[in-house]
Image (tube, rainbow, N blue to C red; front, side, top):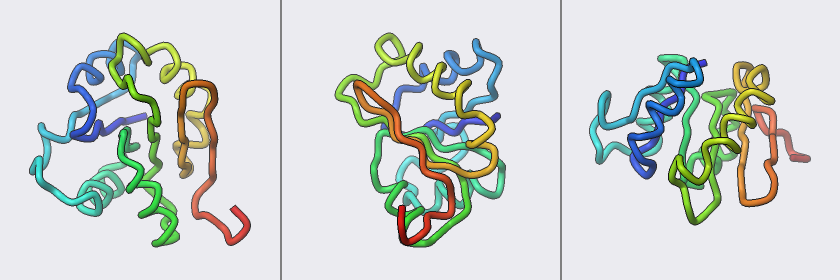
Length: 124
């Protein structure tokens, strides 16, 4: 699995994911820091990356476009640093890796995670 870390998350996540044997890039290393969410999503889809973000707009884009990808993991916590979230995120990635490879939106908060398979249907 390949992970693209959005600008709103620390570049330190790259090393976290690599330590757990996942390929990872921070958006600043491949694209314009001022790029739109749609541009980031398009790049991730074309290049086979899962977007890892703190921005809820990515989930909205998936819903409004009925897209089948890329997969997105959105974190909804105040503290988004690896020192706080690493074990939770790694556990979720391992648990849902197959779904992420097929197309999913995973929302992670302090106490739970929610998985939605792409594309969203009217009853999601």
